Length: 337
Length: 268
Picture (cartoon, rainbow over the protein chains, first blue to last red):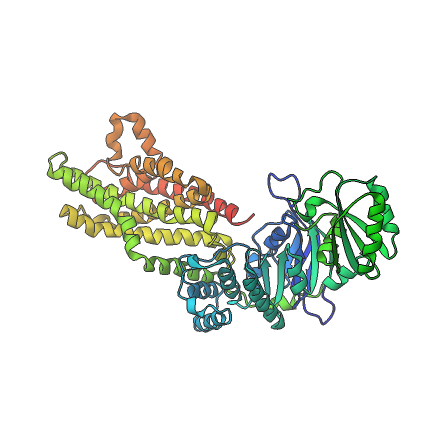
């Protein structure tokens, strides 16, 4: 909420519920959050978490079942026309106008939004240049790769100088170079003061770009904070992941024994399907993550000897610092994928 | 929350401006593919006119009178079918797989206006195609029936026919799922083509009563009959005022279903 003197939130969602016809569950289930002007807000969650639906409501394409949403102070259900001039959308899949050249995609978009004719061409050329598209400006979008189409769609979105830019999975399916290019452009926009709201199921993307991350699952917001604060909320400073083969005695006792090791703050059992659906750990094969307050490498030897005592063989060890993925696992018990 | 001072500072774009820009987009795209447009809209009525009006007449199977009553029927056919085709096929694709309509749905204008633009543009395209049939008729048939005294009725019926076709296109374009686009051709297009009284005057169907009833259900019949009343008044026809009333009612009905369908496809 806006405090005296501060600008209005760029986007707000209050008690938002969306249930699609013929669906047994709510796609969005009582969601509330506010995006501050100028920030990069990431909605992180697995596919089906309700991220795209939330953005759909904010961008006037999905009618909420209940609750409200507004962009730059304009209620999107009550005044969708006015709301539409506040934001722009970069959708998940290519929706460029195939009958128009790249340049005309930009120019007509500006015309729809009432940008005066004399400004359209200059602005289009500037953006085409900025996005490395000048050479292909007269081409039709049909012949564009996913990365190029994505660049065109971001450039198009900027033609009417929106206050808030919504990006739905902006780099899904892009090769690493294209992805970095898009990230760079988004960081530039952030510097220019454009508010960005992006959805992603990629924790790296959320961590790399977002000032604040809302973690969503099954239509609900589970946590909302800066990436650093979210990670800091986890127990421990680092993690050790251990995999063992089948064998040994009861699992519960083994997990408890791991928890007794020095510096271990928490033991989490990972389900094989979470990590890699194709991996078959067998009936008693086990993967656990230990959150450690001290140095993780020092824990490997005691853990290995504990395993040996339990009659299990160590098959894999991974050391790491917690990531947003761990935050998600901590909140839901499942991995993001 | 503070007052909406920020929101008040926003200069809303006028929906009329957005509407004109979206209409200009369609005109611009058509301009870029003019030969395709002409082939698409003119070939079919041209061949019908040539075979039924000229070839069969020259071979002695039909009379000059038949060519005269066929011509207004083919104008009706062109008006309705062009409007329908212009709207339905691209709309199914735009909602179904290209998604390219999304950028226009996000323009600062009411969603209903995007649908209205579709109808206006399809109507314009249909009017161009229909009026082009006049010189074509002059070339193929040497002369065409014409009566300046009934020009008002002629103009009103052509415009209503074009709007009727476009409204029908809006209904079909929002109703037909993309995977079933073939249905448009086989189950809608062909029956529409032959039950619209374009190749025969409706009152003469008295001898085939069931077919007469069936054709009375096709709103295109009233376009054909209205144009016959205007161009060949001596041929028995449905009374013009009935034609106009039925057409206005059919358009109102189709538009209300079509716009509702459009909203359903545009918003989740």
